[in-house]
Length: 253
Image (cartoon, rainbow, N blue to C red):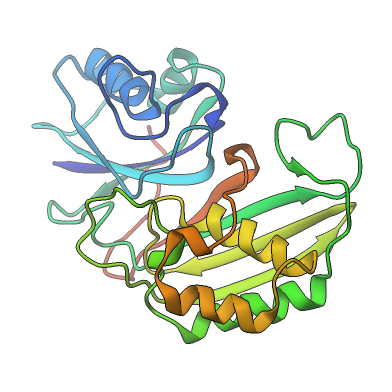
């Protein structure tokens, strides 16, 4: 039987989502809990792979188990067992072939930039000392929808077979002394969002022009793009599945 878990986490204390030797990761914490409470070794598959320090307001994962879960107050037990920076939001019984990663059709990230000195958002937003040109950044951001190859924003050493992504939304908004960049796509490359944000901030500060932004994308050269912004301002905020994946929470658990 297959289940989906919907979780959220603060990534500050973790070396990303994916388990790795001698490192503390979110996936390891989740699997440790599931294996203990279900009394069998549980392996999980996440909908994506957030990097070290990146947060998730919504992440899905799936796992398989031989028999239906009948544990009373499963969600309560999960959140009592797990560290305070990881929360289980919902559990879903799904079809055996539903896949948390491969069935996802879109993912959304938000990046937070503070343009005011704010001691309360030091760990949750990237603080800068200037106010960039929001209009120019939005003009550049909208052009991302015209491209498919984003090699220039990807980590150089990565095992992907293609650098193509279909971006469906990319826009900046301003609220309460912060600039918020929202981007949606069918998939993302490693470091892609942080590199895009860093390059867009260079557009907003006048370091590069809109035309040069286009040239950077066309170059497929990571060295041509801007510096990646810090991880602590990045949040995975939404994962979308087709209607064929029925995500109805199991209230009895």
